Amino acid sequence: MWSETLGYVDVRAALPLLARFGVELLLAVRPWDLDALAETLRACADAGVTTSAWPMIEDERGRWASARNAEAFRDFTLRVRDAGARGVAIDLEPPIDDVRAIMSGVGGAARVLRGGVSAAAFAAARATYVAMIESLRADGIATTAAVLPHALLDDGETHDRGARWQRLAGTPVDGPRFDRFSVMLYTSMVEGWSRGVLDRADARAVLAGACRLTTERFGAGGGVSLGAVGTGAFGDEPVYRSPAELREDVAIARACGVEDIALFDLGGVLARAPSEAWLAALVETEAGDARPPKSLRAHALRALVRWAKG
Image 1 (tube, rainbow, N blue to C red):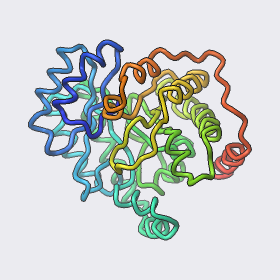
Image 2 (image 1 turned 135 degrees about the horizontal axis):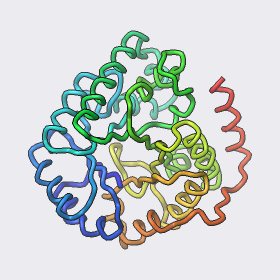
Image 3 (image 1 turned 60 degrees about the vertical axis):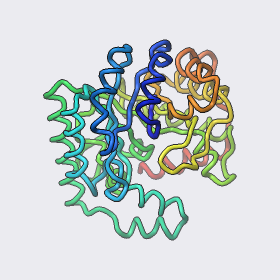
Image 4 (image 1 turned 90 degrees about the horizontal axis):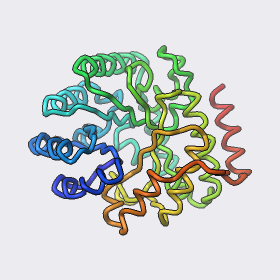
């Protein structure tokens, strides 16, 4: 369970619920959270909740891990480690201002692409993240990479040609030896942010295709993040209508061979009672005979993906 915006007091109050369902916590840590992190991690351990810290630096420095802020992000992540984290989740996304520009329309996306990361800068950032992950591994800290679906388009090689989509986004997924990968496949956002181009059935079909690519791309280390139940960094992310949609998505993911499933996010779960319904949908849903609907639009999108993969 990801927890991005919920305060630590509320997180600690939710620990018995997470423990009852056996849910791991992926806990956001901003620079102003560091003083309270050690106490919160101890509370998680005392409650029997496995917890990974999810570092995020200031928005003006990009918020998430990317090629544009590698050294600053590394330094903060190592401070999170020193505060007692025994697991770390690295969220590989373009800087938040770039994402906002891309979401604003074609003009914003074009500006971001024109200011892309050079091959040399990307390689240097990747080396920084490789060294950071090796340092964490040496300390026995398990690592998770949260990655955007574009990573599924690359072939898994660490040279620049093999990482062309990662370089375009400035997110070096390949190279660092992460223990597991969680691909962000939020059907509510696929549907909502398509501005009417895709409906719920299309989004479910997209999810199925992306889950299959996830298992092909990352093997046993591949997982997915589903959602969204509540809003996150942007405050206006489209969300699930009900736990029934989460159950559908979990069933599809499991039918495609994905077992490591995370949900975004804890704040939304607590705000949309009964919270137990969301957690039950996450942990108790089996693959069954899940069949995503046929979708001509999703089929066209898959054809475009195959073309993009070259």
